[in-house]
Length: 55
Length: 185
Image 1 (cartoon, rainbow over the protein chains, first blue to last red):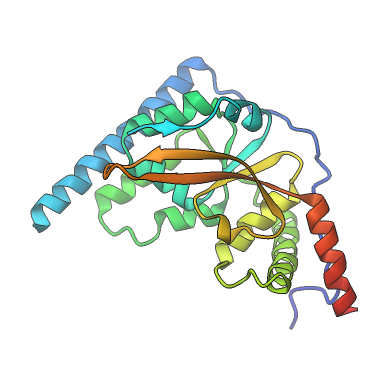
Image 2 (image 1 turned 180 degrees about the vertical axis):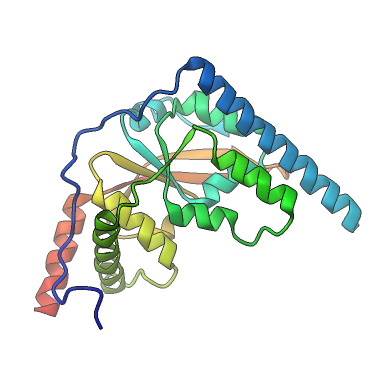
């Protein structure tokens, strides 16, 4: 069985104009950034702790 | 750790959907938080999309439950928007990926290109007029991609890792696809 047609053609989206993704608001964006930064910091501490233990 | 780039970056990234390759996504997650904040402020990037193949790559091979949660928390922030995974769109992307693989092979540039690279390239191709890609490995996106800018990130060992802002070049694609058609006809 072939999932691909025998003569495949390139596909391009019909949506050629940029539409900004829905804005989440300044407050929510700050919260999102803080959440992301929090994950980054906790991950780094976790990796450092893991490395320290494995030494 | 800091990001070094030129002033034209925000202009290039403006009004584009920015797809991140896993190497860049992992870099901003694993590096100091300044890098992530720098990336947001210097690039003024608000439209970051994550292809589901990249989500898979980002989450794979992690076995520590705490780290799994942190990675999931990071990706689940509203900063990252999941890509459109409608079956009709995915089928078109699959077919684009197959065409790209043939073009790369014809250009003798297919050796280092993996499945996920092809899928991501095919997605950028599908929405080429409004999409850009940030990747650390330009070799994975050969022949039909142009470098628009370079983002340099200082590493802890004082080396610098470069990441490329790439765009799909429709004219190059058309020419290479035409050349390929002459053979396969």
